[in-house]
Image 1 (cartoon, rainbow over the protein chains, first blue to last red):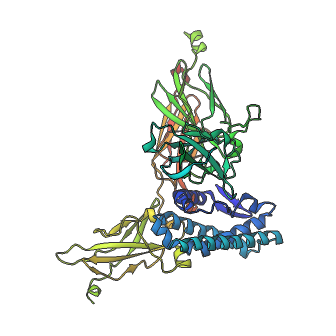
Image 2: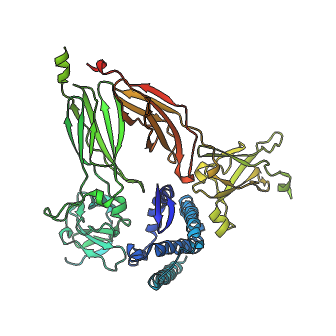
Image 3: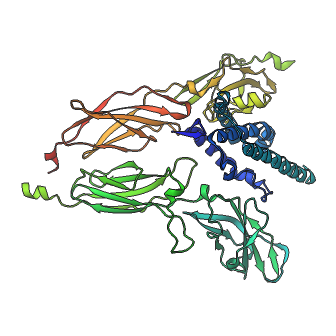
Length: 142
Length: 221
Length: 204
């Protein structure tokens, strides 16, 4: 009934909630992504990572999403009519983040240089993609 | 193929992937206003995260409205786009694209193969997991169970004498239904269940079988 | 300012049973008038990251009854806040909010309604359909000296689920509780029910 992200345990039911919300907004959000030549996250992101690193990478990703994506696209989600699944994702990400927070506080996190570099590369690529799509958005007159 | 002028020929519509057990077929509707005209189509596909659209040579200038891209979309951990344009003489439409297609998430998982063997008061049910589409006939089969390890089966059993239908969740491939009523018609159908995201699954065709005559009752009469 | 005279709806609270959450408040009475209400909510994410955002409730943007089914709004096991204002024509009251935030893990879980039937020697159980969050933890045993309790999880209500193939003439007993994994809680067990399998001779 549980899923293990590294040493941290998350109920399967929360993942079910996440899946439902993702599937409810997937078409709308992906239809807006015209930058099909960039795929930021892949399975390889966690390859060769220790359990503690998987925990830590998940924590960093969730925190990054909550602080940068959900934070900035709340109004856009309402305009697109996907606010409900959007909020479900955000609040359930927050639940998982808090669970992983316990692991962080118990010093279970550790990031190798390789994983640290991977996450920084992800952040850099994300910013690049974001600026590019924001630029296109501006060109189209917003 | 000869260049064509993309000048407002209407695009194909409803361009989607139809996928069962990872057999991924791109399909579309012909443009409304060109129905009946000698229109042909050309297909391309893209692996999400890569730069170039790739041609599907067998689907260049075709007149059918579907194209099997199973070979090109075989890696179910990748995600894909398909697109098609209509060509009529020297004129062609713009490309019409699919949504991003994720085979792992969106393929419909077909039913298992169900083999029933009747006993006097029992039916033995043997299930064979659906198989992933194969590139070559001689390739070793990959069971969908390998792709979805937490896959289960929901077996429905209908007793025609009592008109009761009940279900039994099964994890492995065999199920022995014992202490049934002899000489009774039972109908069985099996549907795959995979926890996680909502998935399309198709139940197996209902199979009906009659339990055998109870030999011990003959002795006692 | 005219809007100020319309009082904010008092006594806001959430009543939750079996993951169905109802927000209620005391009505604002204006003789001869129909007062409407509008409901908004915030999850923990909104409070923590975007404290300005309040989200309109799914079903209660302009309603005349002093209650709102907010089940569809609560989609995470975090603390939620709700606010309600009264509306009369162009006038709106101030917002009133919950005194205590609401988390769905406080919902009251009742023990499940259960039906056990037999089809020949097969003991079948059926539960009411209580929605997607509910599974049923079933405990069953053969009524005989030192018999062993067995357990089974039934994943959803609303269908007949095979429990056990009974021995001829034996009596079997069943009890069950609901399990709501998303809030990591279960209900009390329901009343034990027993049923006896027919004797072997019956089938000959």
